[in-house]
Image (cartoon, rainbow, N blue to C red; front, side):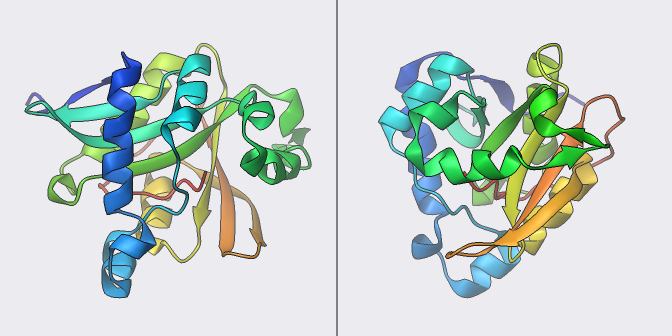
Length: 201
């Protein structure tokens, strides 16, 4: 059965403000504690300038339904370290981690900046489709996809595990406790269910 969603890379910078519209609806300040626990949330609030710089390096993935943007998964290559000071601590941490006995710095990886799905479109396979499109577009360029998930966001933690992400490291900063997880594209992925997602940055 064909998907009702059009899942593509961002094709024009004019689509970036629509990502921010959906992001704002899923920030902790916009939803209740109960909804955060049940539905998940996103943590970091971007601006158009940041998304434009990320887009220039590698386009993010978006999902549309009847002309409306209903999901996104942000692409964040390592070059973003130099573009956004907020990201320096995260990339500094990644520089210290290993995957399968090899330093991450010696492997081809990029970071999933953030995943979010509109509330009306969760539970319909879209979370998996966003990640599958990332793998389809970037697996020739990268071997690993790495992200951080708030350990409080249990819905997102479970969904990332179902996709195929494996834990690398857990740490706490001034805002939350974070799990660093990686998806190895040399391994098969399993079925997933939809969540709004939290890929921290």
